[in-house]
Length: 226
Image 1 (cartoon, rainbow, N blue to C red):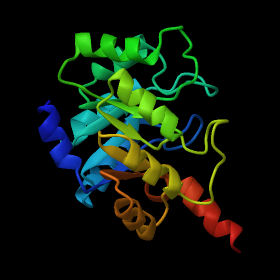
Image 2: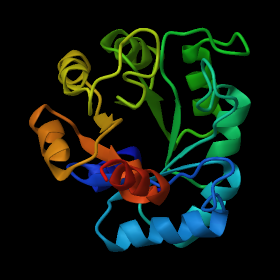
Image 3: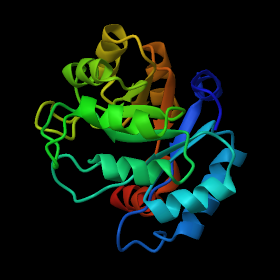
């Protein structure tokens, strides 16, 4: 693990790629996700985002770029690394950045975001903490709670902001103007033009997922056009 500054320097202005499969899918195997991660790094990705402890261990062994780790627990409400225990388990996989839900919604164990951040920091002072947010209010609150960077990951996926057709570039611009930490653009980025537009609006880095690493969804889009 490098210093906070060195990790951020490595992802600044570059493309990160989310390498995740979903339960029941053929690609939902740690060794496959590790191979996908190695492939996107060979293509120029400056960082990788991965989910699940087994996948994180496999991906960590396969790539040497900054790794954003998370654990999904459940499917409703706050489910992205929702507790301090889950964050500490993710941190133990060797990732440089742990992604946690950064919204203002109640957390499942009653611990607020600031307490979760301070708990992570106490055990892993060298780890960067990323708040996955949906709105500018989420981002402001996450920064006040002590996160090191925020992402637009949840824009359009909570009741506080409707989904957009494609990435929510407006909320990205609002968040970039409102906070003084790096902002990672993420969520429905599907084309190179989307990535360029995100950097034009102030993104520190852009993370693309399904458009690159999810052949089931990519294939379904092509089939739907027939």
